[in-house]
Amino acid sequence: MQNQTLEYQSCIQSSEKVSWRLDELLPRDTELDFSRRFLSDALTGTEAIGFLNAEERLLLNQIRSNSYAHLFLFLEEYAVALASQRAGLELHGNAIHMRALLRFTEEELKHQQLFSRYTGAFARGFKVAPALLDNQVEVARAIMAKSHLGVLIFNLHLELMTQQHYLETVRSNKTETLDPLFCNMLKHHWLEEAQHTRLDFLEAQKILEQQPETLEAALAEYSELLQALRGTLVAQLALDLQTLEKAVGRTFTDAEREELHASQERSYVWGFIGMGMKAPLFLSRLRALSPVAEQHVLALAPTYYCD
Ligand SMILES: [Fe+2]
Ligand SMILES: [Fe+2]
Image (tube, rainbow, N blue to C red):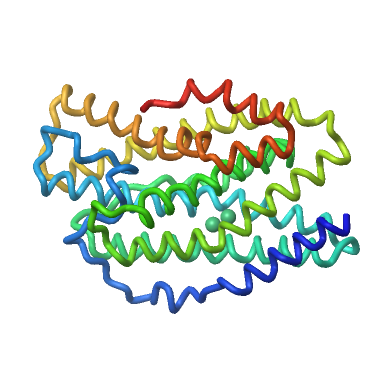
């Protein structure tokens, strides 16, 4: 318990060290540079679509990048609920644990504001109004109907995936020239997510110490949550393609629409599900919780790997 408290204390210290202010990172009146690609092709898969010209591929890259920012806002709706409920459980308990979890909560609320400000700037500058999912509260409630352990494992997946995205497609990307503003936003998101992943792990460990028998059901819930996430991604993809059609000013043929949908679904599923399951740190954290947890993810992975 003492060692765990030191870990929570260390999360607070790291969080204080890297903390940033929203108005400095993304001032309210920011204008985006639409001459550039925002996200790497590794996460948007737009360059391989042969029937789109270069300008149309750039538009799709930007639509996907805006949806990426929006999906974090969308998913952080449940993360706020999770972190605040975990913090509430420490009321009159361990104040250091509670403080670390309250910082986690506050940071997720700040991230939601960041992504909302970004999508606002995007909507002001893009040639058409982008269509985005708006049922985040309903989805957050459905996610939070699962056990805390199931949701913590799902959250660990998403937060380590965020890190993986930044490290693989931004920090070590020497081949693409991407929009510096978008890269900077991903960097600062990642800097704070690093502490969240540690807290997800510590909280999952806390539950497992008291109720080891709940692991199996939590892993089944993790699988259900991935399936539901896939549904959310496909729903956003349908909206992305509507936005693209408006932005390019022509109607795609059935064959073109089919190709776009199939390739973009692969890209979404790989980016948000495959890359998360494959993240080495996710697998090693699961192994540290229980070898059974790692085995569960390894057995499930082929359903989602599309590379
Ligand atoms: Fe976040
Ligand atoms: Fe987070």
